[in-house]
Length: 480
Image (cartoon, rainbow, N blue to C red; front, side):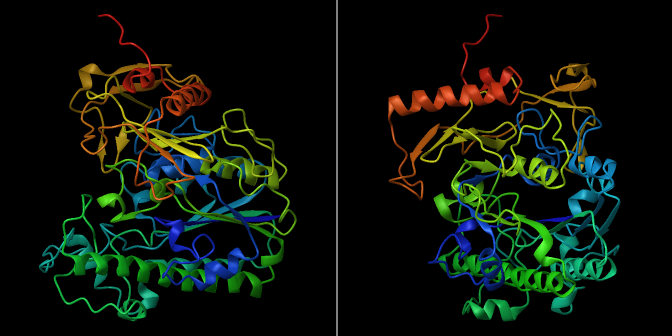
């Protein structure tokens, strides 16, 4: 038996024809693939951004209630390790360079083998003592990426095409194999939105202003022509990604694997391109453009025998793959196999230290924390985060103990008090039946009471640290 997880970073479902017939974005190969898939319509993130989302995928548990950005923990029960224990070969093809940084420990190392294509974003790849000059620009620019991008002399040398080509080579080298699981993930269309000019021409882009390919994590402030240009750059980068995804699907067919392989296609989160007045992600509420993500499942043995409108999220990937291989699902897993009935009233999702959100098939409840956002702790046995260590500046406040209910492994309990929720001041409630674009939050005390109770139930179900209730104003503050 064979299974492949395809993870496309920052993929907005409303830019996919199988979800939005009106989109201008060209993704012909993904569209054709979707025609042979179960297309899930109520699929959501769990934890964001990149590394928390991947820990969700590989552990089947929500990460964001106890931990921010970080590596695989020593006590984590992971999909690749369980597969290896059951004689299923595991491999990952990726250009997601965060795996190689501080805060990305243990992900690639779970697999039997792994392949990394270099050069995305600020990947410290091209080494020059003297840095490149950065041209006048809007948004972000980084000296390291100025060096990296000079290596992309033609389309085949961009990291995403190289990742798909490497995956195709792996299929050629293993075309007679059985019993394997491959994760194939590409960083695009994550920013910077970089692709050959021919893809911009597809969208009739005629922009002549300052360079703009890497939006700032901030509200929209650029001129209208620049804003349209960044949307075209996202579209062009996604179209390039789609082209190479198509080559991978053709290779699967060529080597005779397509018809008997489980293929799960999804994303870690979306990306705002001006919706709600914001660019990028993380610092604002988790609107549906970020949280409501695609899920396409190609399983010739089970196709069209599932409820494609039930509530699902990325923690369901791990138990689905295990069930496919006939392997028992560990008790630590919170997800539910896509091929099992579930009676979820709602799904819980968010980013560490920010709003905690609940989606039902009709409503979205985005619960903002109290103004002080306290108390808040990170629980980890490996105190790393994105490119740095946590707790260094407040080491005298750190405790160590067996604080997590699902493991006896001792962890650090590190106070966190520096998260800026400037753009998450207010709790929002949306009725998606009447406001699918989330432009008009409603005030309905009866619905909000029901959603608050559902939020509390889900926090308990997912073993949230008790202080999360207090941080969200769900319990009275204890007397000192």
